[in-house]
Image (cartoon, rainbow, N blue to C red):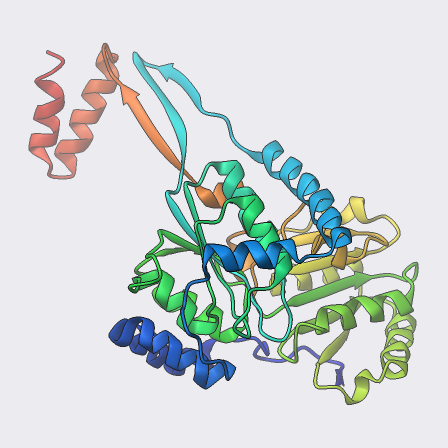
Length: 401
């Protein structure tokens, strides 16, 4: 369907699904592996003989992948690895007022990656999450992905390149619960990363008191900000492309050109999207500034700046996961440009960005105060006393008479 106004509530809102997902999480916590097997049979119509893929299964599946696909994965791998290596922060040290200090960046020990699946498979997602994890130095990578009982060859191939510790053949909210709480077959991880449907994201939200999460990432969102220089047929194609993720995708065109909006509407109708399950929102604004304000208010996952001079307004963009400039198709970020396709949705772009090497690192800060300045010592003691922590102040004063 095609609409002229934005909805009051996004189609990918998690709120309607939280109670149901709580039940699924409780089933996994109570029943462990058997709960995972029963839930997989219920939701995926697959009766698993084991939750965990064997080493032989992973090897055989990987080796069955066509060479052309392997070569494509290898090329994209190098592009993504270069991007994340370039972003990796260095350790640093400094000093002031007689105190030396610094930060050491340390990797998370054990990470769980969720890779959506079922009818389709997404080896690109495993690369998007796994490569920055390995660049960061994560010791153990565990992967959960729904299957029809057999591991996808491309996912197995990427997993072997990553040195994945274990593959779990389960999906949905039950997979998130398993990695958060652990079962006899599934290791409890320190952080869960990955996109997914509303059930998966609701589960990540609910277990975030037990385990770290990267954010809420799904279902897909695309906002296109366009002027008269844009090709309406390409805008329509970009919107429909992101709509392939499902009917809960949030697909928006914002423009101050009524003529462009009408042309895109015609292009969508010619593609049969006026009768599709996906919802498209074509929004008229009065000016480019109003358009940017609308983008920042939405805080979308993907933004396409399909305007004649995108870099002139790029700096005005504050709340967005990833930006494609000019004629650049948003879909290339989904695969090979370098930036991650695991991006914040549901407005989370207002306070976090897409997955990077930083999601797998922790800053360990340190200080050594051999001879701090008298002024700094007095200031510390004064503030400690003001807060009512007298012994804190004494512990400082006793060392630096």
